[in-house]
Length: 417
Image (cartoon, rainbow, N blue to C red; front, top):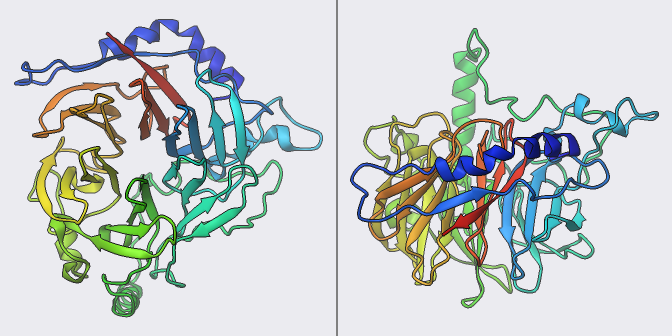
């Protein structure tokens, strides 16, 4: 995302056809044509102030079709922050704000430095909602918190802690990088002593007894945020117990309702981890397995993507289960069903699904979940993906993507008639 990367990406201008050529048709899907897109090498423009993006963990298009990008500055390593030193050791780079606003021409038109998080949305008045240890509402002009969804005061034992709201940053000092903790060392991970495992399991059981699935607050971290402004409701995916769909009043931020897999009411969600067990290609787990994202269609259905179980469940806004789509079930590691978006036609005929593990955008028929095509492959050229994490679609049908791991960039794909 810095000027060197931009020049390199533009130098591969032939990749503008990569996405178009990379749209693959799935067997048996001849009844519908997959949409076609062309990679846009001219968006975004080089970031100002020698900023370099970290992994993209939130992406949203506002009412003006401008793009909000939430990134993780803490992903950057020492070698990427040498321009912060005094004197600087290199021309690039500098830690960016966590929230960056980019217009349709690719220019940065605003930013503010909130604590990094996961999942975001923006309302019609311009307020920005960021998933952190809860959902916080920010005034984009000041970067100050204007409200937050209630959460419990404790973390489940063993859960990763979010950065503090006022975390200090040492110039020129970064982290171990965006894949730290994701890669298994050659000799394998060390196994804790049985007594340590038993103590942790006891602590987790006590925590779950204290905060049962019916807890009407955020208990885990936030994976996704969506707004239903006509109904004045905020939907979010709380990652506690593999994932809970939680609905809050958009004005008061107070809890209204929630559910789990297959429309389970909160009181029906179990705390037994065996109900979340899943082997790629095997039977679906009884509860959401993990990394739950969601979106709401124009006709009032909720699409919840359970990434770690390679599936998408469809419910009503009240949580009544309707159907389930399974996507690339052989996929292991991070799973296949990431972000959920819709085609821009009035009927929203297609689902667009970002796939972190296979690095594709999948195109599904929204009615029956049949795959009609896919776009993209793993790689670092423009139009390819290396950690495809976030997806957004504007009113014209332009696709925007955000990457983590080695990608750490946003890209744009223009519809081709």
